[in-house]
Length: 372
Image (cartoon, rainbow, N blue to C red; front, side, top):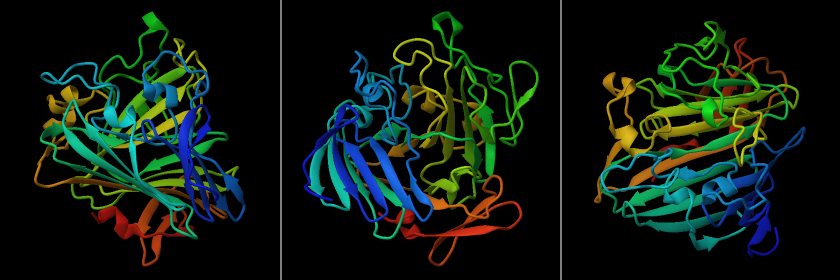
């Protein structure tokens, strides 16, 4: 892979990690993971999105300048409203501030950040494993205290149509507010606050229903929905099957740590800068413990999901670190039809199945999801 020096990649200083199956970059500011190339038997795939203005350096917060791939949010959300005397930036300091590199090898990187608005020590580890087309991440938060929301903000670029699926969920809702305002040039299509039991039938503003299992769709709109894992779930997943490109992207989590998934459909519905209707065919698949993208104040406040017992925040304990693990990767989908119907843990990793029972296997160290 060459040296361990940083390099300007798509406008931002980044550090390279990888293996025989992965070529990935991690930004020093914000810790965003992208671009990432995965090697599969049927070719190279690059699923993560990078903002079209990445090299323009507009006068906007760091997170929006860099906006790419996946990054860790602490707290998750817009944070427009302060929580007590805490006023956090969009998706927290972890997504905006500079990280200190602790160690950097060809296969992985370890970084740290001391947050100042809510004092805590955060360690980030991103690594790869030879022979596996996957990125492992672990974020460990120590010395923090008080309520907090957090999560990952993965963004997938749909270069071709894809089928979207999530693990069985116990609560689904469209963002219960004005996600975008036409007054400033933003447009949404789904019915605010509407509840749903299936991604295939979500109420729209026009009285009809939208099928969120296929994307890109609803061109010219930005929409946000959220689902919470069933309360007895011990393994969680999100997947996108790209039949034309013959691969499946997947994200794995422990739902006892990351209770929900935010799906952000970004398809040209923001006409204001820097978006300027350029951010299209991108789907945020964001594994979180939060209440939508409201941020800390909104995730601590009462909500429909919290009223039904779904966790929207955690109470940090300075004597017990918070450990957040994810695995994101890809697998060739030869013979697969339609959306991923189920994902289950196997002896060697995971098995992904379609509705007809066709299965593809992925070798992974799934135990890393539950480790510390």
